[in-house]
Image (cartoon, rainbow, N blue to C red; front, side):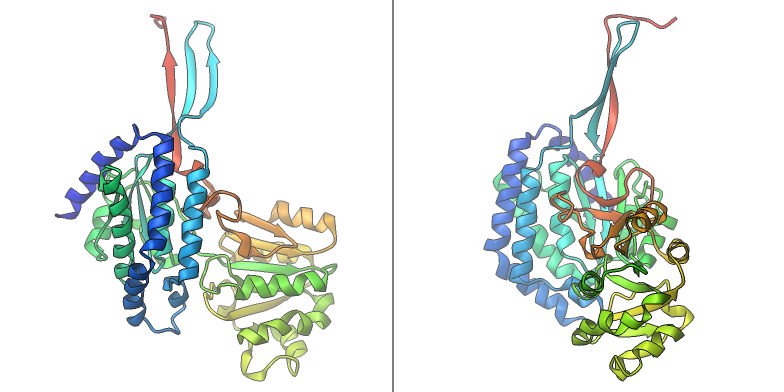
Length: 415
């Protein structure tokens, strides 16, 4: 079957979802969660095939890797989505006009959502759960790095859909080639929305080439600003967690901004990073305070390229600033609008930072690693939007709905 025919099948299957009850959707999602665990060995064996073709030093390796523990987490997230109320059919606004017309603004699904993503097999499950819960069909275009895993994942989902008598085309996996990407990007009339998840290069390519509407989910160039009044007991684990929890994800820390008055605390702030062998690219002032207090083989002088970079690796930059205003200005100049953090005991400084930093998620005394749909109570996420139109930050059920106006009359005519 050619790509156009596949997309047409999805477009037609989407209409079926409008009549599927919320209870039935919840039942299907729980059944898929159970099947993920039951078929864990099948999924992991496929994942091993993908991993065998990738260098373990590649930053994408950790994102690609699945384990029994990670599959358990995926299943839990799917069950959480099943418990969430449907975002569809909500009356967002209603009024009765002076002429008697009853007007309602009601949430509805987009219809067909296309997702283009790289070596992130968990996305296959997350997107399916969120799209089904919101009565959307979905087209998945994964990368060749994860093709075996993605095929196994969709195979598990299709087996459950078949059992429930649901058209399997409500979720379709396209081939991992450029032809499929091109067809998806230009599938106006068949696909209603495209959401890219991956590197800045992927996102830019989709944005520049799609004729279907796009919501950008962004590369994360994330900062933590340690303020003049920052608490070192809070700041040390915040920096460590933000940097090392999972270096390959978009909410991982890339740069610490340090108030000049706190340079003496830098060795303590960085000490836990040694265990993870984090390479630090320090500006001249920070370098002098870390020299002799941080392993020589892990400490380097920062260059211009060290800043404004999403490392996706055990690497981190440090820049010294003289004020809160300088930190805010720097972040707004080089960051990607994803997630930013301030460590401070000064409430006024925190409020200024949170107000003036231009990012989807802004933290006060908490690490950027919390930027995640499940952590925000959204069940799961379809991506983290770094744009400002329609959706911003972790996108879940409500972000993949739109609305229509429903007008009820009794024969009124307009003069």
